[in-house]
Length: 310
Picture 1 (tube, rainbow, N blue to C red):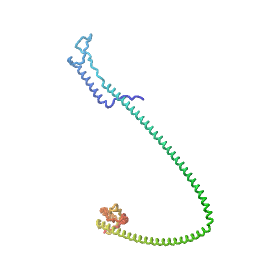
Picture 2: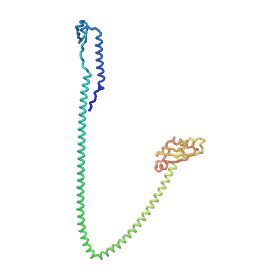
Picture 3: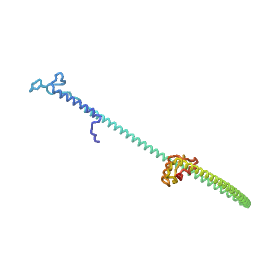
Picture 4: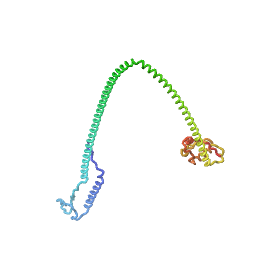
């Protein structure tokens, strides 16, 4: 795998710039100082070299300065060490992940093998139970066959005994048949009488139920008419009628909640001004009189009224 080229880490940018600025400042000070003649006791690390060709002892030659350590090289080395440690840590994490993956695969393989063994055991148990059922069935059939053989022998013995008593048995059965027929006729008469009584009772119950239903319907209808009148009166009290609408009519369909709250009012069928005026009055009222009786509400939850402007 090709080695990734090294680059400056972002966190090194600010320290590097500061270091570079310090070095540039030092070089600038040195260059500035070389243009002036300083006392000799203020020139640290300065060496004067005399040339044989130029014997002037006052002419200074090259100043040897101390070599400073390159901070960039040090930081680069630190970065290389950190990168190597990071690569080692990454390799260790990958190794651990691989070990975990292999362990997980081994666990899944072990669970699959255990499931396969359980399935084999389940199949073996089912086969054992099937064999036991077949064995029990065979035993039961054998016992039933033995019982059938014994019953056949007993039957033959009874037939032989019955042959001797055949005539007496015939007479006895005829007598029993006669008595049974008389009993059947008696039960039929009782059943007919009981059915007739039940029919009469049922008819009476139906008549009573019909009477109650009619009474209930009349009661509900009376309540519907009463609350319809209350609704018309409530609307009339809250309806402002212009003289131009007198005698004109509009039919409005109103939808009411169980509490009497008006959930909707149709646009109406009739004179438009009367329809609009009555509709606004109903919506302004908001809640109209409504019975607490569920049957009355069922007939009045969607109701149509003719409204005549008086």
